[in-house]
Length: 301
Image (cartoon, rainbow, N blue to C red; front, side, top):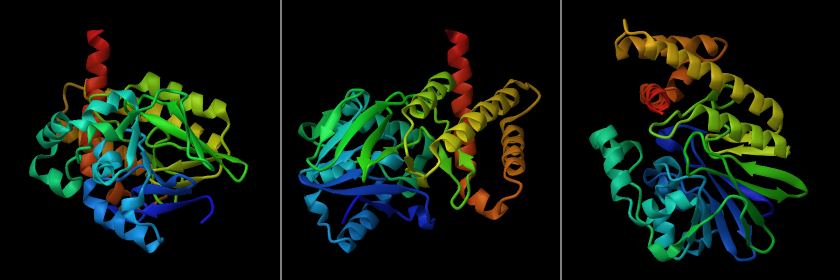
């Protein structure tokens, strides 16, 4: 295998919703992301299909510790993998009790179906990575790029493949409706912050990558155009949610209905059933809560 493989986790039966990236290196197989706990069996099965023993994974590079990106990392850490993560994420991987309890308060019993809990990593298998640090696996090296906005503990990972500079962007370059250029956003509380996110997009744009790889989902061969779309939509979407939140005549159900109508209008040329499958109520509710928390934090400061 040359380069890397994109593994589609078939998250909740959806194609191109969540990815893990597999590299064969001189130190052993390396994964960028681990996916959520609920897709662990799918990931292990896909690794075996590709001729990789799941027990042989040498390292996992996490973009951040949200459950859909890091939930399954503990299984690989238990089997010897080193998990590399932003320093802010280290304690949550070695003791995920607070993070899991917080997720349980939000999702209730549905957490087990939606993501599963974050699996604990042995403390000795978790390695903090600072901004700009280089991880060398022989024939493949990665550089961590601190990219807050979606989360304060967010890294993008840069590498070079066949002379092309590639960036694995986690959530900082948004999600993408499969088969389209339509960006979707996870504006998750309590860490969504507009200004740092815009600064992170500017940082990636200045680095002039040849290719982006989105965890949710797919390859971007025109990074500048994609990042421009993401920046424009992020600002406009935040403004729309701000206006809805600040309208005291509305209840949250009204806000969600108006938000969904706006998303549908933005994607009016797309298959609406497909759009609804990805822009679910849970995502829209999370975004409403994320922007509300962001506005409250700004007012308090």
